[in-house]
Amino acid sequence: MSRTKTEKDLALLAEKSSDNFSRRKFLGYAGLATALMAGAAACNPTNNLAPNDPVTGVSLGSGDVGILNYAYALEQLEAAFYVKVIMSQYSGITASETAGLTDIRDHEVAHREFFKNALGGMAIPALEFDFSSINFASRDSVLGTAKAFEDLGVSAYNGAGRLLVSPDYLVLAGKIVSVEARHAAYIRDILVRNSFADDSIVDAMGLDVTRKPTEVLPIAQTYIKTPIDASGLPFY
Image (cartoon, rainbow, N blue to C red; front, side, top):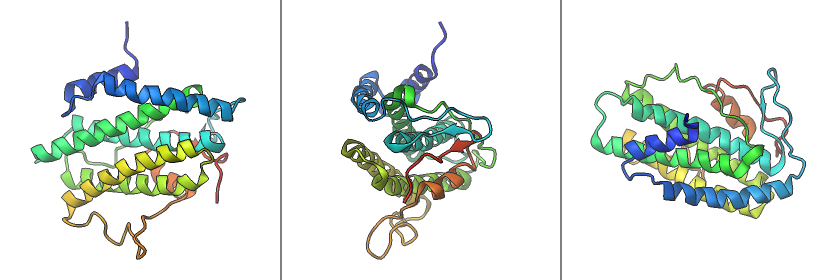
């Protein structure tokens, strides 16, 4: 019997993870996702996803479901990137960097699968990516891209939080963005010591940069081959 994509990813994690990302951990995510899926269905009984169109692309949907799909798309991007980083390790990578990047990969895969399970039948399909502009053999290229992805992800969650209606989803977003911020700080610090909270990402009030979906998606779409239709998302 052929294995599903999820099963293959979990097998990869079991083989390569520095902390052996276990089935028990994944099922813990899946259990919480089941509860959130029920909430999403209750809020969206008719399923607010528009049909996918080859011209306009994959529709994220509307309301909270649309915002969750927006986060799911970004987590798909990050997970795909870090899986490739670990499979094609750059020249001169240290044991410490391998361990740190493996941990980040595991987190991003877990986030991706969490959203997939939480959204259930309302989830967008698996996206296709184009990483041809990244030299995975180069430390500077890989870590520079990782820094850009992590900073983008943190700013995206910061910007999406105010668009969510459900307090449960807001709590979830807060938990995930805190992990993404840890990733961003780690990547920044191994690139340039003490750059983890410089003024390019933290303003004079001590607040993180915030980006709207309309600012985030054009940047992310550089690496996403699948067109994304975000016209149903709430905006501010």
